[in-house]
Length: 329
Image (tube, rainbow, N blue to C red):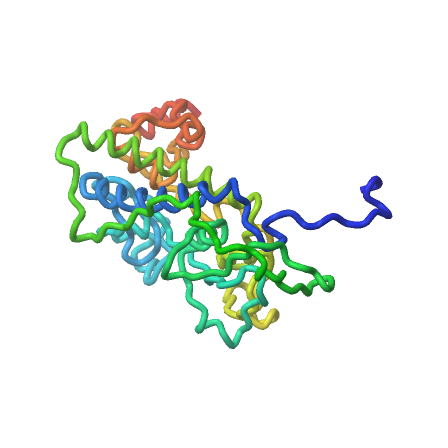
């Protein structure tokens, strides 16, 4: 900062100048395809690996029988003394669909409150990939070929591109996968195929999170400090639809701040099933947790990744009874 003091500022680097970061365009296609592959693989795995969801709250459990812990906070939970009412669930409960507004111009004006229903909402991860260079015909966006010209602190105009030749076909463009409908999903036919599918799903999960993290380092992602609302862009929208604590004092306005990876891709932690295959509510403090996607893959036959062993508490011996637990204490 001392060296730059008194010197003229240089031009802003991409993507702040309106151009794309060229080296991240293939990454945007990889992240998008990894998301589609992850959803398709989860639909197939959930045909053989049972996943239960509570009918009154959003909690899920990977296993044929739900866990016995009384942690339900849904409707009429006081009558059931916090006990869950387990039933079947969908892939959206495992891989949470975080949505955001689609911007046709990421450097354009902020979305006002009056236009909150006119702007389409799409998955936030898809919007991040579109802003990073992914081209989807159903979601058009403005692509600049010259850096913007700033005429003020927050004002700019687009540079004249009439002297440029016709744009060439995008050399970074890759084939785009499509999501398979529920009617066309076929479960694995053998345990070996299930284990291979689980390993592939776990690989797609890591590819998705690592790729999204690389995109977030260059393309701004904002999250509300009061509610889970996510916005892909340098500054959040102006829609006053925050319903979190004391939103009346803020007139429903969001408190935007920089987002982290878990805001964009929530890991959705669930209880890890021990080798005995049974959870006892008296031994709750001994059990570990893992993201729902990872737990499904592990029960499908995949190897436990090293980075999740700490939260899963694989190095902690679980007592076989309450008496043995008291002896340990």
